[in-house]
Amino acid sequence: MEDLFDYSGRTVFVAGGTSGINFAIAESFARAGASVAVLSRRPDKVKTAVDRLGEYGITALGFAADVRDFDAVDSALTTTQAELGELDVVISGAAGNFPAPADSMSPRAFAAVVDIDLKGTYNVLRAAHPHLRKPGAAVINISAPQATVPMSFQAHACAAKAGVDMVTKVCALEWGPAGIRVNAIVPGPIADTEGMSRLAPTPELAGAVADSVPLGRYGTTDDISACALWLASPHASYINGAIIPVDGGWSLGGAAVLTRGAP
Ligand code: HXC
Ligand code: NAP
Image (cartoon, rainbow, N blue to C red; front, side, top):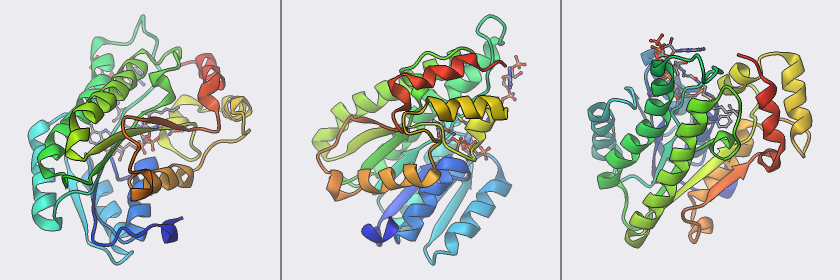
């Protein structure tokens, strides 16, 4: 897929870009020639990600920071512009999740997920805005089916990702006139990820999830990267404020299977 897109000379920032889906996205932009910066909390993950991205012969930067800390996020984005130039693409995908019942999870548990997923996304977009190429930048938030499909034991994630979709749409309205497009990708169940290992930890539940997808399988991280490469490109220049499922049709109804998951 990367050979269809040329991002050489472009700068890409990926919040939460050190593992799973977001790292795969970062890697796909690196393969397509972009300079790439990633941010996440754990310094070891940041170092490993930067080393792996550098293997593509591009300039890679890494920041060990928490998206809940606006000043740290702001500093990372300012440094990225100073070192790599104006930002062409910003991906906001840092997230936390675990199954927990609404009647017994602690208020701090609910707050942790909302603070990371929703407020963290706002922090990333707010800090990125001064550094975005105007016109031309593309912002992509990573949402989840929970934004629109109510799932048991997911009150925190459902609330947070519903908020992410609305932040996406409002920023698309406000920033469109400056030539900045803001969209979201909604991954379905993606194989070999932390998210699905937490939400469907048993072979039985994982099998039920795969069966509930109209296309009959889990997605791959490449499925998501391919959409991100296209969505940030000039081929998608009239797409703004869209919330795009890349889920094999899972959100049409099957995603409710996760309501059978027990914490
Ligand atoms: C109940 C839990 C819990 C659990 C943590 N808490 N895990 N409650 N069940 N399994 C509670 C804690 O007891 C604490 O409340 C509060 O949550 C905050 O926990 P901390 O460990 O202090 O938080 P923190 O260190 O900030 O870690 C954040 C985290 C953690 C979200 C809790 O799991 C994390 O870092 N996750 C990042 C990786 C991740 O989740 N990846 C998957 C993303 S997938 P108290 O009251 O005890 O202080 C995704 C969607 C997938 O987002 C969609 C698939 C369809
Ligand atoms: P993952 O590997 O756990 O990725 C989460 C990333 O965010 C990691 O790099 C993590 O690194 C970072 N992160 C977490 N909390 C952070 C914080 N407070 N500040 C900064 N960085 C933080 O999970 P994944 O399953 O690939 O999920 C990636 C994205 O896809 C998430 O937005 C998730 O909601 C979405 N999604 C996933 C699926 C799925 O099937 N997996 C489905 C739908 C949507 P550190 O630990 O170093 O901070």
